[in-house]
Image 1 (cartoon, rainbow, N blue to C red):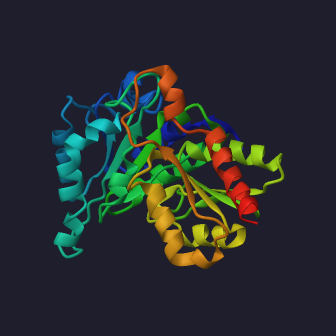
Image 2: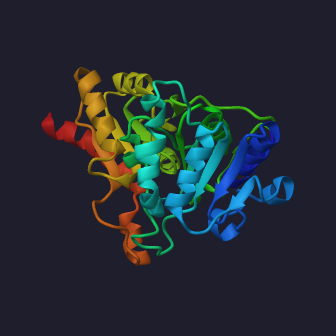
Length: 330
């Protein structure tokens, strides 16, 4: 099977979705600009024209409302937000309208909208250009939230999102755009709500999200060299969450580290910690640990960024302490 990178996988999915369904169109800021979206939309404007590839003014609230209206009218818009930070401006349209119409219309009207939110962090971009807001959207009833970490899942989950009959938040991280992997040429989908076991292990589970799945794999290699067998699970879908996969893994290992690229307090790591405590507490050999961003806005200094953004070193260190704690208790 051929290998392509994460950005190319998104691009291929967009081409195939738009070719196979005339109801699908792309709308958002900078959808024809590499500065906004990297290489993810290359060739789309030439192939489908300005009526289906709509480069909009900077007006997050307005374009989101337009996309919601189009979805209500039977289209399948892909709404692109090049920086999640400014999706705050569209929160009313997303949380108050798109998420609710299906329920308020008594399940008679669907809202097949895909909101493509891009996390564009690092590089001294500071507090207003580095935010990962996935936990906020996972909190809202009526929204599904997916976060792929591989090119295969990027293509498959984008296809699944567009084919879903109600709103899906497809969130990617530009740190992943250069990651390569095997991707089928044909169109396919990856089931929303199903996670993936990236590495089998017996001593500790590392539950990871988005780019942190790659950091978790690096941490697992470090731990393996120290005699600790780590199982790495990639959540892929935050809502619905693959509860069965998480609980099955924790039952086997008895320990859990949650690695999330979002803030720690009230974040996805908190939700998973609570879920495990409620569901499989009796299997735990140590308290659940979390590796996530500190509760502070992103710094502008590259030196401070090295401490702010968590990586495989921090994941391995956290897992290692779980075993040290056990030895001290004995």
